Image (cartoon, rainbow, N blue to C red; front, side, top):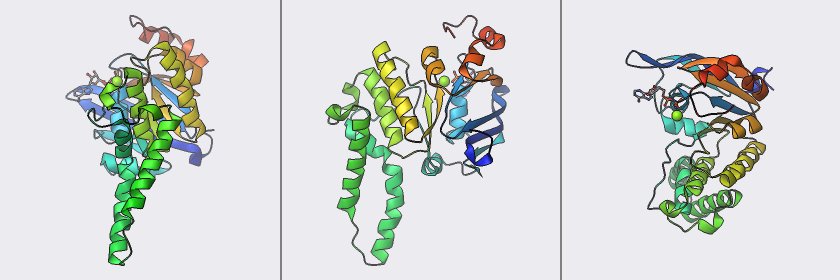
Length: 266
Ligand code: ADP
Ligand code: MG
């Protein structure tokens, strides 16, 4: 998929991030082909979440370039990157605990509603009706559709904190999907899930990809990673040490060595 330039979703070019004198990421290059599930794996502290923070604008890079769909990403604001079509979930779940499941997803839609604000302003200037109720209906309908897709419809009026851990992870995914991304970054989505929930997650990630959304998956569950990824990039101490198809990665001695001492079976 990655021969032609326009089939690349995301390109990282010599991305570097330092904390003091410590390199969390160093000269990191990576091409993510459109439509792929591309895993980024590596031992704890390898720089995986830092990479996501740079892509989403949550942290500024010290040097290097990120290109999304053939255009450099240079506006540092995370909201701009969301509007460009990049969404993420967090390793440590971040939800509005006191709000309902549905409200959490509708908030994810907020970035698109922001665009609609301009539409509304324009309509005011042109003395057209605001169409607020219609906007709200559209947002709610969209959120309900996503909850249905993820099997969370029955819990739509529950408080987010009342959901099981596995369902809270799904809700994070729902909120990310509500922004209509073309690229979705998943940071350890299976963490804390039981085997049944992980199996369901496997299906969900594949269905998201089948909707045309490119996925970068950071995950420690190697069954999940090796089962669904088209390509795997391996980070260790902020540097890429291997990249290839799942089978190649599983047999790579450099990768096996990097994981020595970690409770992970490749
Ligand atoms: P991973 O997600 O692969 O486990 P991280 O990207 O979270 O790793 O972290 C990579 C390294 O950078 C770790 O050594 C971590 O302690 C360090 N690090 C991450 N964020 C910060 C920060 N905000 N300040 C200082 N050090 C950080
Ligand atoms: Mg991490």
